[in-house]
Length: 328
Image (cartoon, rainbow, N blue to C red; front, side, top):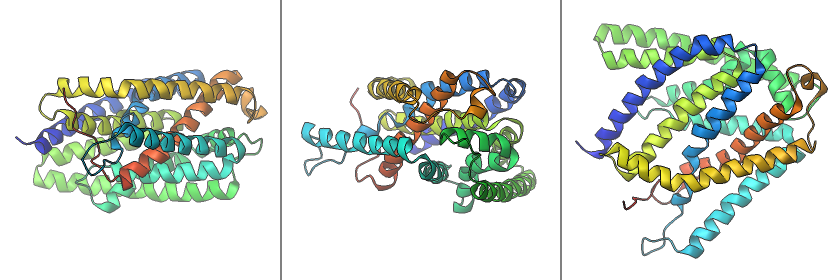
C-alpha cells in the first residue's frame, strides 16, 4: 500500500469520526446555545488546541535553494516576511476593520473551498467550502450581524446592504446543499455504495450544525474538527505515511514552538484589544457578559485572519513541497 492509499484511509477514518462527533455534539451544543459564556469557552479551547496548530508547519514551506536545502539566512528572511505580513493584517484590523472583515470572510471561504476533499467536483468544493461562512448569514442573520458588528467595533449593526447580500448568498447555498445531499443520497442508495452514503451522512451532519447551532459553535466544529484536522493528517502523512504514531510525534515536535508562539500572539492581541483601540459596542457589552471574554473572541478572530492569509498564500503559491520530509 503506497503513501497516498494510507492517507486516503486516514482521511476516510477522520470523516467517520468527525461525522459522529458532529452529530453527538448537536444536542449538548444546542442546549448551550443561549449561554454565550459557554460558546466562547468552547470556541477558544478548540481554536487554541486544534485550529491554530494546522498552520504551525508553514515554516517548512520555505523555498529551497539550488542545493535542495534551506539556509538559516533564507529561513530567517522567510519567517520575517511571514510575520510582517501578519503584523500588517493586524494593523489593518485595528485601523480599518470593516474592509478587513469582508476580506477575511472572502479569503476564508476560498481557503475552505480549496481544502475540501480532492474527489469532489470544483462546484461542490466551493459549495461546502463557502457554507461554513455563508449558511449562518441566512440561518442566524441576527446573531451573525451582532458578531460582525462586534468585530469591527461598531455601535451600528453590520452594513445592511452587506448583510442582505450575504443572507441571499447563504440562502442559495443552503438550498443547493439540500438538493445536493438528496441527489447524492439516492445515487448512493441505488449504487449500494457505503462510502457514498457515508459522504452524505458527513454533509448532512455539517448542514445540521449550521441549522441548529449558533454561528460561533458551527464555525468551531467545521474549522477545528474538519478543516484543521484534515490538514494535520496530510502533514502527518508527509512525515510518516505508514506509522501514524511516529508521524504524529514528529508533527507534534515541529509544530509545538510555532503553536505556542501563536498563543503568545493571541495574548498580545488580547492585551491591545482591551486597551479599547476598538471598544466593545455598548449594545453587546451588557447583553451577554463582561468585556474581557468578548475581547478574547475578537483577539482570536484577528489572530486567525493574520495567520490565514499568509498560510493560504503558501498553500496556493508555494514553490517547494508542502512539507519537507523529516528525519526521525
